[in-house]
Length: 383
Image (cartoon, rainbow, N blue to C red):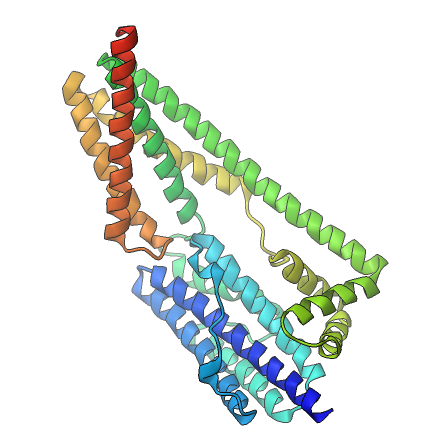
């Protein structure tokens, strides 16, 4: 019985360590994407805090005869996300950790573990007092990152729309540069190239706006449906849902008895039960939803901007001069957009910019070649 109890304690400590390491890695990923020095420092400070918490659990594991060096760092898939998706992933992990520790207080009787959890709470409370960034109460953990960005980005703009905007400019720029290159390969009639590019940009703008609106709205509806179904299932058959949660914790490495203790404790609080089930089964926070209208606005607006860039020379000049200038402007814009993507990815700005430039050149050359081939086969049609 003592061996079984020790095994349970070791698995609990390893799960605590894994959760803190996951949060730390996500914060570091967010810090590495930050170009603004102060925000980067804040995120790095949060990462260091999580690493220190992980170290506390490492010391407890050493007391249990487990060498921390033998632990395998968790695979943090979310750290490769960009923009607001990474923020939501961090919030989901932090919310899950808060619920986990709250339940752990009731299923683990070891006073030293309670003291560590208390220390973690005090650390976050002290961090809140220093920067007004963290909230010590468990129910406010999901707002942790929102406080950081509202406090630090109100002068610089929010990053929530950066990803959508960059990808919108990327789509508009690439599509319209391809269109005007292809049409120019078919005919150098400036009016034809300009009209084709303009209506192509307009169509891309409307398509992107509608797609962003529908995608975000559909995602919200899927989340609402999942939450509603989960809440109904909890109300109608709570025993079955507790059994599901037991199985989920068994998959994390706990045995049946340990998993049952944790699940029963979580199920005592209906709101926490719902949040836990939604997060464990579907992988999202109850409160995290996108704004369809904002997605449509930034998606369509940025696509229009990207689509108009290759057309600018055709408003001022004609013929080969306009085409060459359009190619130069478009290639430079491709590099700028690629470099800007480094804000929401882990890649360096130079590599990302050169990669985007290469893609733009390939699109332009291939499109022009296909247009020239069509002209050679079917004859140029001037308007």
